[in-house]
Length: 182
Length: 301
Image (cartoon, rainbow over all chains, first blue to last red; front, side, top):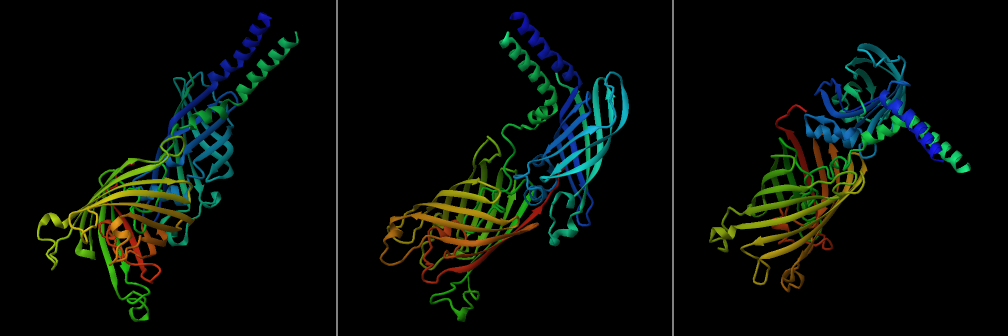
């Protein structure tokens, strides 16, 4: 009986221990959004984007709380939350995908990667292929990526009245250092 | 033996699950921000119709306000002769409100009604959070009014008699993206009252709300219950509790409110003590509020 329990416990522990080694995460990634507009550029940054990368199976996920974006103009920040992103209803933007390139975390190196997966913004999910770089350095991963999000794709409505003020495509830049979970 | 097999299966199953769900459950843990973020914009502006709101003017922002109340629509002063009150202005208020910080605002304004000058301070004691945090917003309002011009009756013979002070607790909750409600218990202190028997310390409670029909358009209502024995059974003058109904439109940097209210005056120091117009007698008026926000300084985010 005890032997069996012990055996069960052993089986239970082993895969978890292995997977922990391959799982990297962050909750202080920097995500910026930028869009050039005739009246005033739209620029905001969140320093609390979070993400998980499992190098065993290439699974990669990112998320950001919409309310964590900081704008230089507080009124712009309010309108971003209230009128465009509707952050009470859709509090976070997420990406869940898989890397096409295996990452060797045991030695330093840099990889050009593509992640194919689902990008959810404003409650609308789109299948996307997002490129970026992953740099392995001292057992940590520096992930960088830049991609565009079209307001139209995610049903973010811009009224005709303010059309000229707001660009239809928003540039997203992501920068984060992932470390293993201890 | 059976027990052991079940245990083994359970253990190995949970082991598989823990690997399969690893990234998902980790993401859930990472996204859990505890109390959550502050609820944004319980109200579009720091003013509804009669009441001020818990919405603060943010740091370095300056809110320029123009508030207007026209003459009676109906009754003896209304009708087509005065184009339903549009020829008259019962009160005009021009004011500025500045955000010293996200939680502390100061404001200065001037009313046509009694030429009242007012200076106020509003401090956000509590701010509503999204998840399990603070369920309400609570702002404390302190306001001092000063009437600079002499009146013929000689009631302002001493300078102290020209001051009135108002203290109010503004408590609000954003129940959904559409619905926000607030209650505003307050006390008005006046050194000179309307007549003998009028309370120098006048208590009132406001109830107000906003319901958004679209993202930029909503309906607003605002009511004040004034606790005063002098006003309740006055043989000479009839007093009525102020009630305002209106719509609210936001267009980028501006917030417009268009409303109907029986109260003539705009500042609390005036309308709480001195509302003698009745909805049922046609003594309600069209009014509007324009709020324009200026960002004076834009720090790096």
